Amino acid sequence: AAGVIQSPRHLIKEKRETATLKCYPIPRHDTVYWYQQGPGQDPQFLISFYEKMQSDKGSIPDRFSAQQFSDYHSELNMSSLELGDSALYFCASTRGFGTEAFFGQGTRLTVV
Amino acid sequence: DAKTTQPNSMESNEEEPVHLPCNHSTISGTDYIHWYRQLPSQGPEYVIHGLTSNVNNRMASLAIAEDRKSSTLILHRATLRDAAVYYCIPFGNEKLTFGTGTRLTIIP
Image (cartoon, rainbow over all chains, first blue to last red):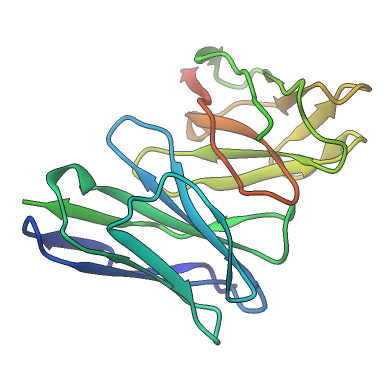
């Protein structure tokens, strides 16, 4: 069965550069969630989209933006990268709210 | 967001049952109780969820208190592959938010 696909799996960027992370949800899933997980920390919710509209917002820095496209994939755009942005970024998808969430394997972003 | 309270860590012997508790006293009436686990260097993985009745699947069982203010995830026979951080999350119409889960260690 198709799972949530994230790309790239690994990304190395320099400070002040930009990065774009992509998330492809499971077919027919209409809701996408983004998370940031620093070393030894729990996943922190960043932002979510339902039917291509932002549905909720968490601790997402103003330097980050995201959107969900007509094919339901989502992209997280990160600008003016800082060393502290180095983390694992996960996305998850659901079909509506309250249903089983499927997570991708994550993108490991390293800012040097 | 509904707040959850879980033990920071638990240990269990291999092949024995494990009961992982969670308090969610502020859960709303429409929130499901979800459980996820995260193995090292992997994305979180769905385990089980329920609303009011106890639930069973191939991975685990979920026992939900009658007042829905607490729940217990039951692993019937722990294996080394069950070593992970386990999160209980009330999830309904709002974001799926992780709290501080329980790190489960399995002793061979």
